[in-house]
Length: 212
Image (cartoon, rainbow, N blue to C red; front, side, top):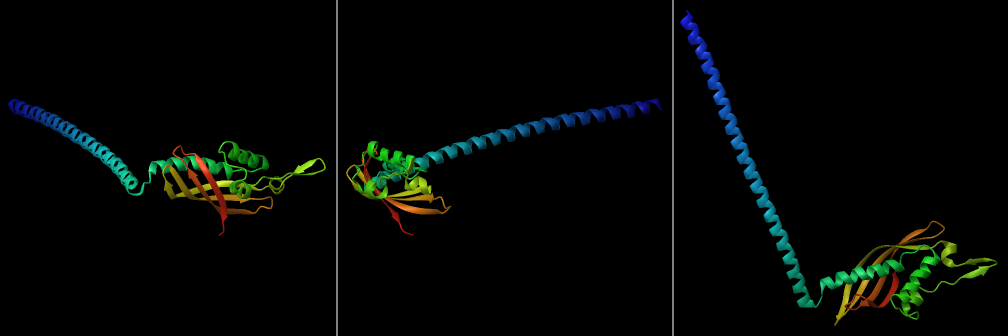
């Protein structure tokens, strides 16, 4: 009887040992599988990142090639156009964004002094004429302040009209908003025609409101 109990005890111990060994082996295999999977996943991620970088480089190269082909076929330098747009947008914003006669006059003065546009040009005599002040007793009035007229630049879209050496001429449609003291608001398109040199300086400019 005692011998049978010992055998039963040894069988239980052996079963526990075998289960423990199987568990440890399974744990080790699981760990190895996890590490192998993680290694493959990291390798795949690095491969995808490398392919993405190659694709981005290829796209940039294709864009440069496209610009070169366009320049060779038409003489149009897209980088020059982008820089002209940036410089001319600054000018256009300055003359189409004001909310008082003081701001209007300051913008007009900049056109003359900073951009060297003649006061006798059609731009300054027709599109941006001088604002006349008039007095009534001790008070000074002008059309902009009395009617609370204003203008606000919204957007612009330029098109190259012609290229003559280093001189680019553009036709640009500018959208502006305006309102007055009666609460009336309106959105208008203004056409700007201007020429620039290789330093992105405006050589001449004209502007007129487009009828809707």
